[in-house]
Amino acid sequence: MTSIAMWSGPRNLSTAMMYAFGNRDDCAVVDEPFYAHYLAETGLEHPMREDVLASQPQDAESVVQSLTQPKSQHFYQKHMCQHMLPSVPRDWMFGVQNVFLIRHPARVIASFGAKYEGFGLADIGFSQQLELYKMLRAAGQNPLVIDSADIRNNPAAMLRALCGKLDIAFDEAMLHWPKGGHASDGAWAPHWYNAVHDSTGFAGPEGPLPSLDSPQQNELLTSAMPIYEALSTCKLTA
Image (cartoon, rainbow, N blue to C red; front, side):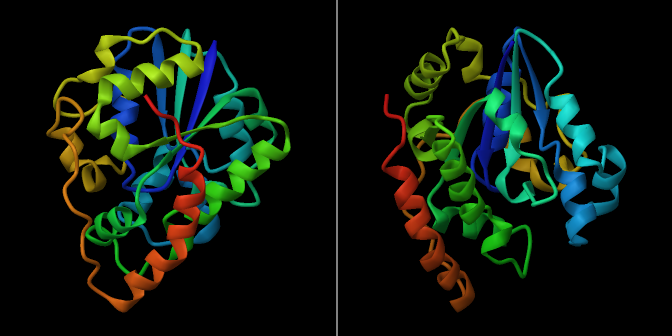
């Protein structure tokens, strides 16, 4: 079994990537398995909080056990970096293929801000993403980095390159999926996944960067940009 852990923050094309792998006949997928643990530990009042808590194990050890059990020929795990609290074990990460999905922070901040108010850097995963990347590198791994903008610019070429690095065959089915969502969608999908539920494939190239509408959001951008730029130097190209 090939287990792929895809690490991103919110609004990073992460659900579309899960749908791409989920449309393969040989691949099982899981959607943000540590989310309930994260909410239970932090007490954050996220949209649909009670639904999330009721839908998943809140014990991190139980989640880890589920991630290390065979599911299919391939097992794609969609993870949010900010969910990896100190209470979450990390040794299991050394037994999977790790990929970091990045996106320009201006786009992340604008998109997340349209769905959730009053957030800070810790809520959008950039600092945790770099921390996890450095941890894996220090342990001798060579995790992959892929930019959502490059995927949207050329989905076929980037997914083919990603599959090549993961040593799995590229499947044309990854470029399209049925409209309306996936059976593995998390309980939070009604709040967050509207756009991708209306899609049947990757959207085209993005336009100009959005203008951020508050000093707080611009401060976040200033904090997140060096992290994005550092990870960008390692990103996969087609």
